Length: 214
Image (cartoon, rainbow, N blue to C red):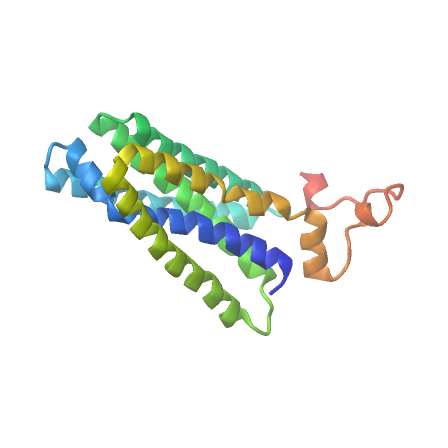
């Protein structure tokens, strides 16, 4: 597994492990906001996968139409920030309307991140061990997510929801660090075996690529 794949899988693992950690208490939090109405709380919780499912298809079309290498990275980072903002909204939430908006934003941010992340990971997988490298990524998400889920449940039971939301939002934001550490030159070298023209000779004429043409 090369350095580029490791970076993207690390980001993916952090992001989805954080999402899993909210499963332990978020339905209880939603029920509290709706004054014990389990049906309404369930409907609001269900809003997230519905929105995420709806936005993933158009986002995939948009990303497939873009040709620049950094386009998916931009979508990943934007998705992380939208998702993190949606978590921070819970720190100031005392109404059902804010919770509904939060679920919509979370679905948009997570859907955006999912498509961009999977495109980047699949692009850099070793063609001779695709299944194994995919398994490493999904296994990491499941095991680390399980640990995060238990920790989030413990923290929320001891210190309340708001401390837990703050910690989860902070950890979610950390998912963007591995993404920005991957340079364009490293990524292109992994794909082609060659450095980009700019990095090879700073004085050489810049060839028009998909990025410069946009």
